[in-house]
Image (cartoon, rainbow, N blue to C red; front, side, top):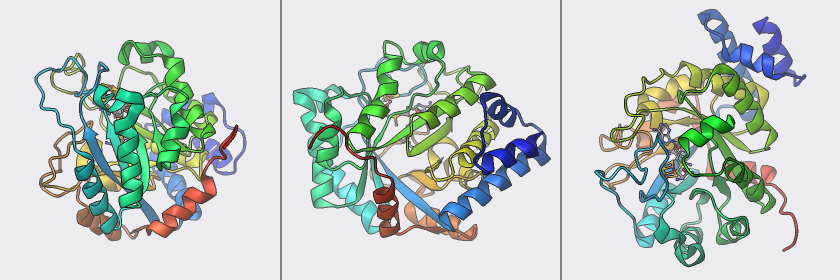
Length: 353
Ligand code: SAM
Ligand code: MD0
Ligand code: SF4
């Protein structure tokens, strides 16, 4: 029974893949509400009424990879790409900090120019944001060699984000062409060994089934990442998956709620990059506790899954997000609340300095 599985999960008792699969198979609206309300209760008990906020700084949209789902894949020749200067990035991160945003997510495609010379460009940007701005930093640069993680940590990053998308190896290989499944999984472990907090993520609507979803949720938990996300696939023009029929947000919302009851103290994003601002309330109501992909208007910045939606009209701006949170009876967390969370959850660095 659903109520029984929820009860066991909420009380920290053993929940297996069959149970997770059953929760992820819920279709009855009353059962769905049971799941969401349990997730809200767990979140509010752990975190109170505060929600963390992340600004998204997609600073280079150049990429050498060719992921079939991604707008920025190297074969998509017809798109406009940009690369921001270090000065612009520092300014953008400063603006986020001044507006009370908790973290700057410094994201790029696997841009060869940033990777050149032992990743000098990337490390330089991270350390400049640390030195000149002093906001918490997430680095989302793609897969890195193992020895890079302590350098990324030393440059000043708090987090390293790298999403597996699915723990179905075969499906992974059909999506992330010419990329190693094991190497991408190991990224999260290597990051944590270097003292970085780590984020993993799954995508929904890529051809996976409900068993894959359940297994991915459990595997992300086993890796120990402090932040875990689910995002619904948004088909992209000019890619091999452009005509795939997209899912609505139901499966993503269930995944958010299931992760919340299984992993009470993890950070779980409500991404504005899937449905824009229209997707905020449902994701918070499903148990998410971080709003990600806040993007200021008039800065020529793009999203990943929704490269334009709600950016230039200001709907993904800081002010608008704060307003909506208040309408729901929540508030954005202060940066000292956020930093305390990080300090309490930061993995210990292993093996030397
Ligand atoms: N290039 C780096 C990488 O791939 O790890 C950093 C970018 S990372 C933020 C891009 C993430 O956005 C992917 O891992 C995927 O989870 C998500 N994403 C990309 N394209 C998407 C799409 N069309 N729909 C939904 N999510 C997408
Ligand atoms: C988001 N567009 O939070 C961003 C991105 C990268 N670390 C995150 C997928 O939705
Ligand atoms: Fe490049 Fe990341 Fe897009 Fe893959 S998901 S093509 S690695 S930007």
